[in-house]
Length: 185
View 1 (cartoon, rainbow, N blue to C red):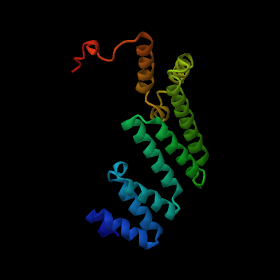
View 2 (cartoon, rainbow, N blue to C red):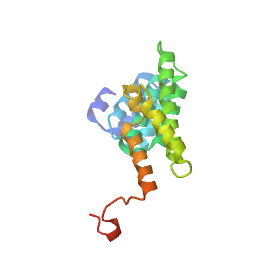
View 3 (cartoon, rainbow, N blue to C red):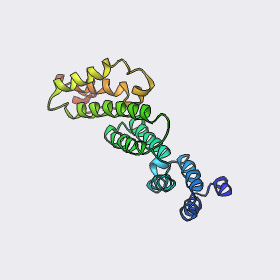
View 4 (spheres, rainbow, N blue to C red):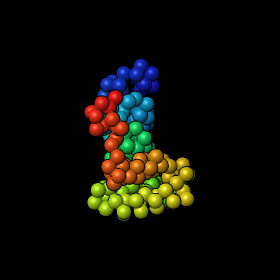
């Protein structure tokens, strides 16, 4: 397996790991596959989940789902998908047997709560903008917002962007100053 990993032949690695029935090989393969562009390749992502599941490496699987959520937030600003990934992470983390399980689950619960509030606020922008502003203000007033844990839950800039979008809507400010002339660059 180590020779296959050095060769970098992803198809052969996935095939060999799939037929090996060895926990260590599953974990090694999943770790290797995480170094690839797994987010844009559904087959690789499915293999990572499958290998961690077969290896019963629930801590690693939970960590992988947390990575998925972080990528959805950082690169795509897709908080709904991130919320789903965080919930999957919590589900698998609850099955783990690590020492700091309670602490990690509590931290993950806090991240999920923050993302849920932000997703809810985004849905309220047209229907109940006052509630949306209240939720955004509460998120920004959270004393932990600057801490790594909360900062990775949501991006503060995204909260401000939502508030700016709301201000733009109520004042009917065009996105581009040349929008009325149809000459936006």
